[in-house]
Length: 446
Ligand code: ATP
Ligand code: MG
Image 1: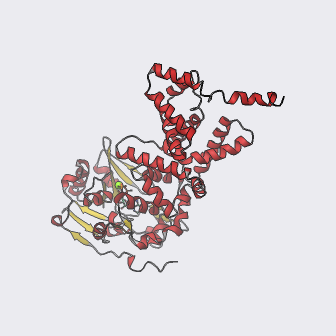
Image 2 (image 1 turned 90 degrees about the horizontal axis):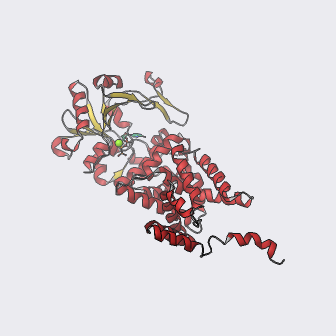
Image 3 (image 1 turned 45 degrees about the vertical axis):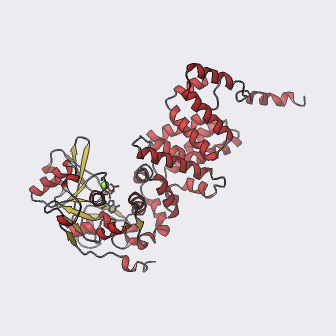
């Protein structure tokens, strides 16, 4: 292990880019972030815009949020802003609240050497993973602890310059994502950096630097040790921010999907018909389109699709064991959810609607009498219908396609049209098919 990093291990070498030589203008920074920067500065502290805010502004993109770093301690920040509160355990931070807008202010972090008096603040486990990280330090120490060079740029409010310690400006130009420091060590400290590498690569359209990419496949399984709640948050950033399909493919390519979604990965590996891949990809394409059109998306639907064939396979086994279809599905679903929760903890507010989406799949073909009307009024009907369309698309199964066409038509029809459709259902055999079958043993060969 090791030894293959060669030139890519980044050494700190500060470059200060004056205001006249970079693109960041105060007009691009939110008023609230500016307010915080100026107040810290006037109180005699250093204050910097840092992270994604600086990166995105330099790329002429709209930042998602503005993070601030300062040499004031969280307590000092707290005193300076009445509208603030301290949060976090792994990282202690101040949140400054402006209505719904929250500006995050972090105190510059220091080193976490094994010896020295700072050791009692930064905690590492046996694999070198950082558990707690509240050692304060200087800006150059802080820079060293950031993940990627393009995330380690500081916009200094005192003179509007950009401070670049690790060649982040050059990497921005080259559209290259490069870890600061020795990649293997940095991934071991925090394995989530591996999925961040994928997320930023797709988000920014960057390529992974060779040395940054190299250790990922063999270190991917370390993701299994990340707390399941943190991974849940990460999956939402990966799959619900407009680049879900690309992220899914790249995560699989680097072996990062398996430790997060072991159940799905084992299905994907033996997906002969291609339907498992097709369903996930259709759902992600759909989700990306919705996100990019500013339409709402929910983790319930996302996870319903991710787990569907896992649930179906388990349910089939239970049906073969003699369980009734509905009970089999419900038991299988509970089983799949609790297994998935070992790696990614799914909050109940999402698993409950996912469960309903699955259960409704079994009811969508029972349309006779008042059933279609009742179903159509169900609060989860729309999600279940959208899900049916996805399944039909993924499987190209004639019955599913026919069923989804029927519901689309029902949706669009007026009251009278709907009644007529329901009456026709009675004649197409779909309702009666089951009954005679039950009687056949008695009658046939009688
Ligand atoms: P986004 O646009 O997704 O918000 P971001 O770069 O701002 O991207 P955040 O997760 O908001 O990402 O983190 C802010 C900054 O904190 C990062 O730019 C990086 O400098 C630092 N950071 C975040 N997570 C880590 C980590 N796991 N290891 C090291 N540095 C990190
Ligand atoms: Mg951010």
